[in-house]
Length: 209
Image (cartoon, rainbow, N blue to C red):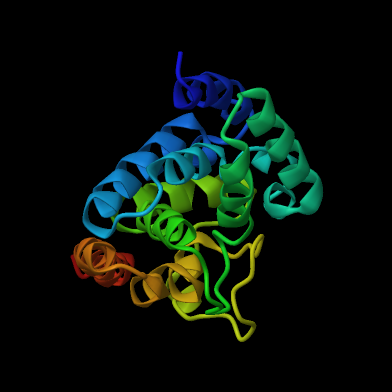
């Protein structure tokens, strides 16, 4: 069993504790998207794959905890236990630490690919489903046309709003945050699909469709 197979086996156990929007199947989708980007952009696939599979470990402890130093310390120990190449462990940790970083700071290619793949899974048809599922799970309403605007505060990890407002606070802005050409191409189609959904949401709410 190679090191990625070992990670996948353990990933299922860790991620089954998360909600379905951040579970094992999400991690596999992110890894698949990352693979397509990597084919075009290059980078260290072992680091990218491991980071994709492990980026949401410990999310069940809270939406901020999974990128905290205690969580990253546990992931570091897990990687060592898998006999992951020692000289690549910190690259995985750094990719996970910054995968939800919106500061614009300079990041590794591996982190940028993880960012793109994770953000692509947050938009389009899958993104719409994940948004409404997560919002309902947290006990928030899906919202009304009155919520079709961004919050005054800038988006941050763990921020919760009615589902429809989350589109305006975060999701419709993800297209412009893509790093790689291929991700930008995929993001455009998914972005357009969300805009059409929002247009129809407002029309149907008002009984015009």
